Image (cartoon, rainbow, N blue to C red; front, side):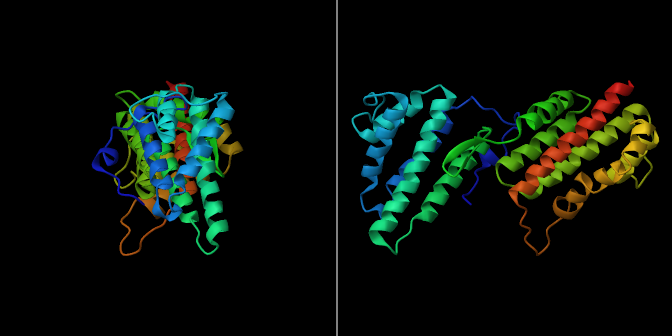
Length: 305
């Protein structure tokens, strides 16, 4: 994985994902990834051929006879592609070009293998697409390239019904700690720092429970500050009605074995000498489990006041 600079490691957390805000910075990052790929020495100066194919693909898809001259480098085919890409504002057309880049990456790999047989550039393709996906995350864009197609990530139901309401509710002075911890969890997720993502998810969930208990005047006994005990304290005081507790007999176990346990096992303690490899899908699950857990308890809290 490439080095992550200070500005990205310590950026102020923002909202979760957007789908229509493509900054100049993001476009430049995509352009640089493509340049690195097409002008890699392994293609033996054939990169220009793939650039011409890319130009023609864009023209056919977007109904252009040729791409206009825009910007400082517009006398070259590559310059026209980059200038056109940077001037676009429509999200669907921007995503088109990112897909076309990926298609040409794959085409270049297949042609190279057909020409040289033993030589494979698949690693270059995988690396380029991995970098594009990382730039999506770093810029808070809810997309991912899978099999040369750009797809939206995060279920729209989860995003609109869980993630956004949680962020809007906790974004006030009372829940300031939760707000910071939950948004920081997302920042760690975007940058592939999954252990710290899990740790901050667990902190956000525990902070939510502590704040609710404090606001309701429920005394937290010394040594009982962990999520398991806080969940029990909330349920014992009927934050969630008894008839629902009885109906969902496994409610406590769901929470005990969910956010708190995941954090305790994988994110809440030092790694020691063993390097933990936490997969992305696991961190994604953690984020949404945390969101649904916070939403349930905060909704119940709001209904009780």
